[in-house]
Length: 189
Length: 354
Ligand code: HEM
View (cartoon, rainbow over the protein chains, first blue to last red):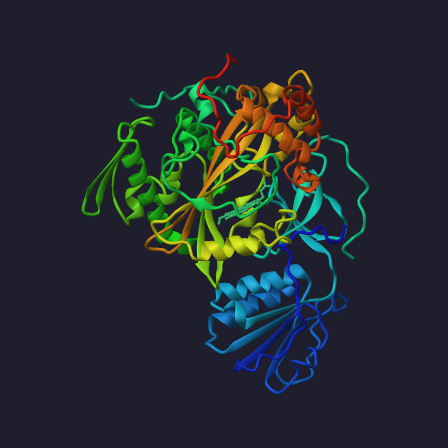
């Protein structure tokens, strides 16, 4: 069930510093420090405070570190930051899959190329699932089947993944035989 | 003599769809051998071939008007079926030019194109269109050029941008598809959008096909056939509307199988475009009922053999599992096992009465 054999699913490598870059920015959906392979002089590190902070913003410790109250806030700031960037920036991104490709989309929109962005999945495996029938995005899906918040259909979560939408595809599982819905299994914790 | 276009056909509720005898005999039957498996079945798209469907760059047949009307209905419900990413504007004009020039040259009684510099006049008689516009100026057309011209063509179209040694599906008009979503796939690379296809990745089919296409030359289009089956003569078997058409797959019985089951063939064509260097992919869809297929002796025997030996992964992927055995049982008594000629041509010029 975890590998449906669909080849549009990305595969991720571990993050390594790309020495051809002149400036290096690490953005993470978590609050932990950057991996050692990146942490050298001149690395900027943007992280997100855990929800236990309840909106308070603990001061970062090192130089070049920045904390955000939410991933959303980070993303918006990143857009403004990249709008003013020149050639030579390398972007390292770590977090759940939907976060990775959301950041990738923002970076691409601001002119970063494929070879200038590095992605590493970590944290929850929960999926963003787009209902192919009504186009609603269902966030944080951990099960093989999910009831669409938009149209109510019971969606099978296919491994078909769109980097543009940062989302997997959900298809009504009982479309042919309405009501014939198997038990959902927890698959993406 | 022009094509006699059928009026009042319906490819959705209250279906109404008929092929003339000539329409049956020109069908691009997809099986040249008794067994079917995915392969890089690409050949030059040169005029002529085993049936008249291969005679022109873009084939027009008796269903032209009705299919354009069906497309308009789909787009009215779901405008997202036609999308082109902003950087593809040169490819949009390339597509408009290629389609207009081909149709006017191949079917002069139905289409004409007059050019006076960049001022063009396009006449589409079957649809009653007479449009003057300035080539390269979108505001002189009622909608964007790619949508404008593909609304006047049969079959789906996609636009592939070539960069990073890959192809990206960066636009399309997709209203008669076999269960894939342009809205979801737009922007994907060749291997990504083919992600759901079983077996072909492992056997290197997609690696080889992509390598071939990256070298596709302007003026040397290629073609291939692809196939699946559809219950009822329904053109819009999109994943978007799957909750509406999916239940049809449970309605096939030994009594209605010959009327309900249709072989759905895509005559796929690939053209390198001159200015944009993009590739235009035409997906021309043909539907033929099992009942009409049976009127061609070679086709009914061969279809029986192909279905009997079809790898289960393919049957599952194409959605045939619920009714494949019903078709086989229906065809089996009419297949004596005699050897059949290689190739897809029907080997007969007259059909028994329907
Ligand atoms: C470059 C333009 C092309 C586009 C836009 C395209 C698009 C697609 C799409 C969207 C699917 C359905 C995937 C799904 O289930 O979601 C598909 C299936 C497939 N494609 Fe392509 N394709 C192209 C070219 C080719 C070529 C050149 C080959 C040659 C080998 C090929 C072989 C196949 C095969 C074997 C399938 C499975 C079909 C079936 O069993 O029904 N495609 N294609």
